[in-house]
Length: 83
Image 1: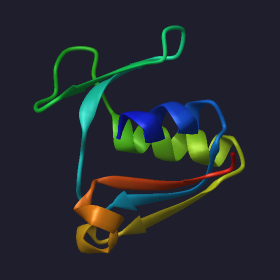
Image 2 (image 1 turned 180 degrees about the horizontal axis):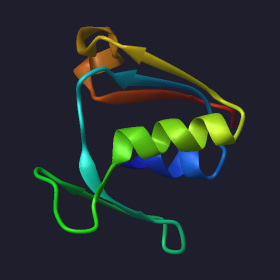
Image 3 (image 1 turned 90 degrees about the vertical axis):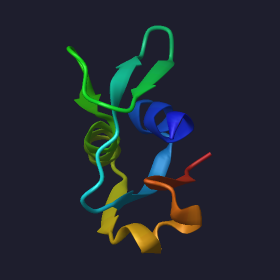
């Protein structure tokens, strides 16, 4: 999860698979490349899956929203990296 969020922001994700109906709350600081994940939404949090999807699209990648059981290893997100 942390690697996919960071990679999406920095344009390294070619394809992103995001589980439908799943939210992962937390924060990402691009200056320190720090991802914080929280079980419940906290003040200042965003849905990191949504943020990763947006960054992937903005950086020319493709996002697939799929049923949770279709994401590899039953994770909330999976990515194919460019490099």
